[in-house]
Image 1 (cartoon, rainbow, N blue to C red):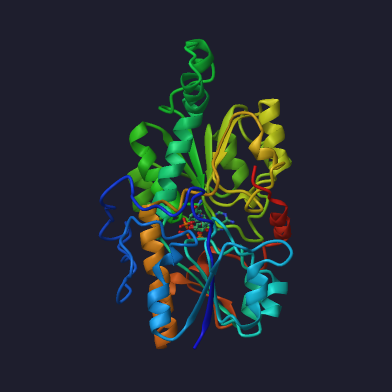
Image 2: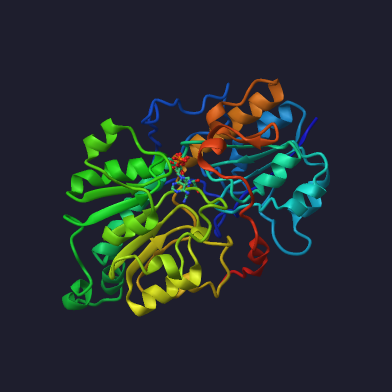
Length: 400
Ligand code: NDP
């Protein structure tokens, strides 16, 4: 019997939903590159249910308990006496979602003597100290592709919201106003602008494809070049550095994982190369950016807007500068946890657990660390090391 600890976000303030906005939750049949959707032997939930919150339990309780395992579900993960720390000592598997990350630091890994696997229900395992996990031979797995397209939709929405000045105009409408000039004095067309993505992986490439019909010029920067066929199809310009990309782009979107090589890649120095009036969209990870440098660039007008949904730490403290800086389109970390995406990553988590308990290999594309080293998608997209430092500040969050 194994003990599994799932750290999930809190239920809605008014309680777990009893009805939903829609009767169904359409799903794609296959991912764009042909990868199949998660295929566990069974699921114990209806797609469209809220699964990522504590009462949703990722739909795992029945399956785990029927197989004789213990499932502990909690949202308590930071600060003194948190439930995660109390449950760590005999946990065999930890599950958490990047939206409400259980920061699995080296200290926590050292306390979890029985720990064999850390599962990210979603994508992005930077909240785990991957170096420490590798040294202890702990498997780290995530549900690759489960919410990549959901995030790409959020990138497109955020880009349009900033460029068109949607959010302040919406506020004016809600507040009974009608001053057109106030709405449009920061409003432009996206058409004809130059848009560049840092990383053209699953999300970055999807963003490029979604934006193509807007009549924009598309650029990208990555460690590996895309196939010639795709470059030609989308008329892409490749850059080998952020500096070269940001010098020509009106919109820059960050779509790479957080790892030691990418931490704080956007900082006071690198921002100097951005065009005055550029928009920056970051749905990848908050720590890719120096938070104070971003706020300063918006205050000075060097950046025209910043949007995204990722912060560091999470939850972000009340005094995090991105809550109050001008011209931002921030949300809490939501883009990859639509009800549609939850159905996929809950099924993917179940698939990973079934493989683990039945002694079958976990799909290579789900692996981040295995056998003491980066593996699978981790070997391709991450670099060795740890990006969790400073995560203890998540304990400073107090709900407003
Ligand atoms: P992929 O693994 O498909 O793509 C990641 C890409 O990043 C790869 O093309 C990789 O390049 C590239 N990359 C890695 N390091 C660098 C670097 N130093 N410079 C430039 N490019 C780099 O992942 P996804 O596209 O699915 O997801 C990307 C990230 O988005 C996740 O790791 C996560 O942090 C974030 N995310 C956010 C979500 C949200 O809800 N906001 C949900 C899902 C993901 P190469 O392969 O050439 O090495």
